[in-house]
Image (cartoon, rainbow, N blue to C red; front, side, top):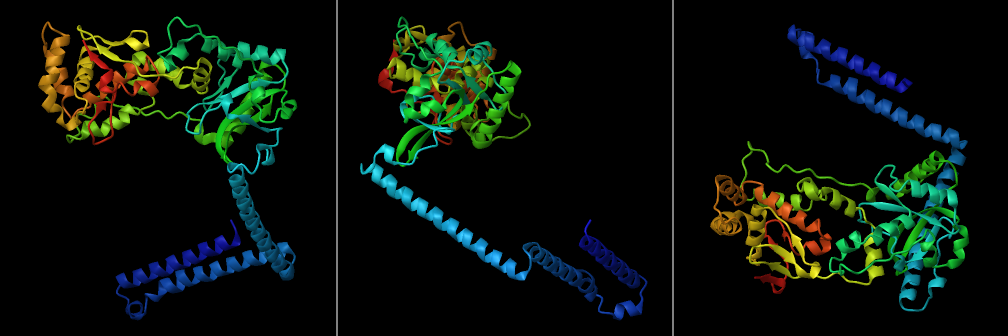
Length: 476
């Protein structure tokens, strides 16, 4: 505790005593106290001491700075120098900005070549061609750190072979390209991203840990890469150039514990720079809602956006949770696969067979399996390309019941009737659960970039619909 804090405490105690004395005099009807201008006491014992002490503390702090600087003359000289340094720094930044804009414009107009622009150091930071595809954008949730080597290292390769799915924290994944290419060659992930890939077509992907080296903008920098971890980020406006920046961290040989400790430190270093882009966000949902809470007819619509944009949609659709979570982590894989197999994903026809099966003939005759009530909801929305506003669901109750009757021709039992009642009640969350299960059925089969055309979706407050062009819908 400083001397000035002690003084403030004493002043506060004196003020408190004076106030209590004044209060006691008033209560005891003491004329002397009544006749005084007692309202001056707070000013005398609180405000004035605080102003005085505060001023003294500011003065002492200033004198302390002067003392450290070696006297008034040196203090004022240092102030001038600091001001000059600040102004020079601001001027330098402004000049750099002007120079950057001049060079950027010159490059975009063809007046400068790529080699005439500033370069990264080529030791800790490297520039790679955008076509390499071993990178993810800023908004991706998972970050991969890739093992890269310019010369084969037996011990480190052996380490990554033994630790195929090594993760430390913050959901960073270490990628060992030989293992990665083997996984891609299995075909499951490729067909998830491009379900129109012929079933009989073989996929052959061979990548070793030197794969990124050939995509260096400046091949002469390869000598600075021995073996280590590379964190890739895609940049799109570096003097108007699209390129991939690789942050390189040298990895030394050692025991498994020593290598893991190095990797742990690398993750810390990377995360300190890119923390905003590394963590998963999980949003829980309550399917039944709060039975004691009163809801308006906008309730289901209010919940729709939150439920259907939930990155952990498989919380509701348990049967696809594991696969969807795994495929969410593919990161670089999607770009690599599309580049290697040279096949652009396309929409398939959607065929509703006579027995009301949902099939996708252009995706190797894929069939989408749904529970009867979920299928009935899907077919209801498919029949209405204009969409349905959730608060108008009661108007479609009979139509939904008729569709359900076609799916289950033996009749509607009490449970089925209750399900139809619930799903067309905009005060409940049942319609959101059904839409989530329909969405899960599609994204368990193929990537959301394609799947979003097949499930029920739409902005809050507007009609929800299936966006698939109706010329691709076939009713047998």
